Length: 135
Length: 366
Image (tube, rainbow over all chains, first blue to last red; front, side, top):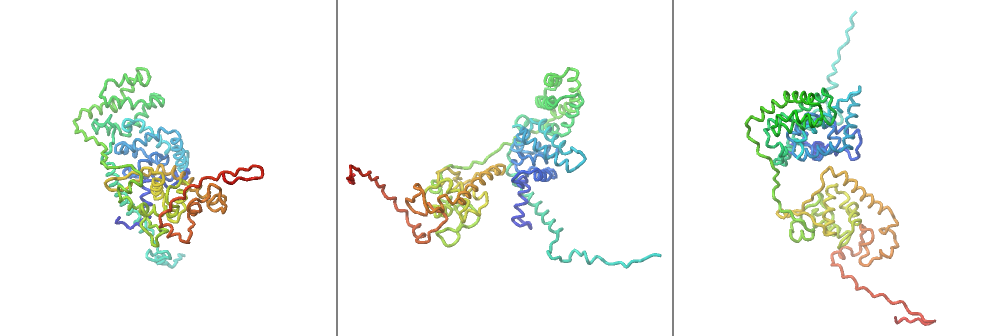
């Protein structure tokens, strides 16, 4: 590549774009929260650069916004949509998603539930438009 | 009295071009990383677009609907609208979830007049409530969708996955090497390997790895434990990355157990269908289990590799080094011996019959 990055830097950056969930092997709430934040701040185009399997991870799902899910519904290929449908059916994973969202809300302080509401909206959107996700 | 303090010029202290001991410029580093990241994103996007060029985005149920109509129905505002309706009419979670399904059904089938009846039957509400809900939905959604559905549109070409035909064969490695000689030259790992029988490092090709494997463990098949030991503790293999070790494991397993590998017949290449990253966590655990097991074997001095006395079953029948620590090299005549073909095993000796004892006479004739 014609950039000024070393090979290791390139590999690290590529991994953080495509597989941000690989930053942790032993899942711990703090690390999952960091991944969720990194997804939260991504632009719409960058969301689909995450590998489709990443959408089975609770930390990735927790970072999705209403804009992201709208973008995915209009531009996401089947693999992405299949995985999104699968994760919302998994109660265990959804519990973890809400734990991460709660931890993000605690960071904001003051009994705020902004992140938990955001996650609920994302889940509701997928359910409402299941016809566009279910192949 | 006004006190005037002498002004001091502090600019010298904070000159940006003043070299510090680490010669590190944070701003230019940030810029370098940002520019590099953007370039990587552009390249990843190109690869993504190529990978998903023919992938379906919508299922068949809505792929023939006017795209403008689909966009309207997928608007996030409608989710908020349904939430408001549920609150206004005290709908429970189940009823709230059914609402948009009904609306989608009416829109896709263009059965506009069915809306109120479906509300009443599916939501299980009184007809007056169903009527009010239907009115709200008509105003907010149905009028617009009717208009869009009547608008002429050029249907988008249905995007279908097209997987190019590749001639993939599944056959054991030994057959693959015979039928497709180029597979022997395929590189398995990235760094050169040091063969015991060759002074200089060589290409880490399939054939060279097999030569190293046989040099360390001996020719013939080997079991999972020996193979695992080789993969994790041999001089060349212990420094491999996880992905490289996976590939080597596939090669050696096919060699030992005649398991089929996938070969691209045209390119004469072995295809390693390594599991995607989401599975890696499971494989990492399995990997660690195997590694732990191998370490335990080495640490346990009662086991056969280092204990001087051998069990009956471990008595060497052929070459002694095959049953010792595999990484111990017998320097005397080892390289030459390895290059010579293995001598055939000695014919089995029939067991001697027990001598018959009659009184004080022992008959040894058998």
